[in-house]
Image (cartoon, rainbow, N blue to C red):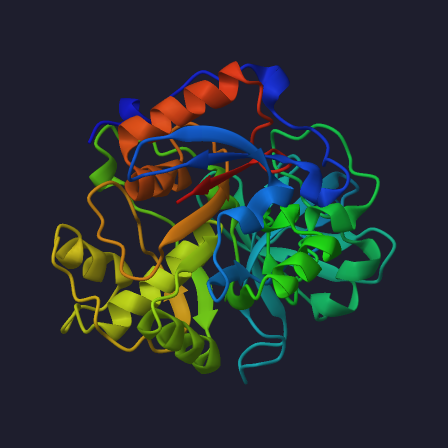
Length: 372
């Protein structure tokens, strides 16, 4: 498929710059992938579209305070955006430092450049230069001792206003630190909505996927199947896998809260179904299974911990997810391709056109879409 099929023009005034209050006050577009019907609702109407006994699966990853400011030993300013930790502090006999992959901002940030982080005694140096502004850096103390005090929440590049409360870029059920960006479909849930779900006997379970900043990068190849997607750490607990299995056997539906939940669940499904044989990566598994219209759906989902490089685009056969709650995504992004795989390319193009016509709010702090 050509990349142009996932492009659209968005007026800049529709990019939400601030979160709506309260969280559950956002609008929600309902897209029926069976009938093609599209209509408009409020997020607070969610329980009208989910049955008692169905299960919501959300990503409980927490955004870390990943933006750090400091100075080079020579005096120049430096900015670090943490992407992922490469090793635990003092975890190896040959390592006396904590090592991270980062994006740097500043001048002449070459290998061996030393720096300090503002308002701390924390020091580090650049170990290796990667592509573009990416670097490997080492710190002389574990960052966990400093991030909550001097780190800043990294907002997406299209948000130009600071949030008054950094917790508004976190879900209310966040638990495990590790993401550089929020699982934004979950930002709509308020404490009031959580109580409403319980009252309607709708269960909420969790997976974890630590989101990297590559989630904002557009796909640049012309034929999307040639895209090499980023890898992210994910986990599905054995207990949650069992709960999903029981729900499926009872005829209940699994509703993924966001594309990261989809990637985690479908990764687990591919591993559990034994599709991969001797293949080593999820992308290889997916390539083999992608156009299997009669894929194995009668299997026991198993828990897992590890990296996923699953790229879901049109033609993918979904094995776990029955409904998808998501936001409106960037043009040419891999997550827009995932949504298009779930609902159909033409239906999503129509839905996005109607969202623009009706002035929905887009992206991280924007409105929701429920695909049923």
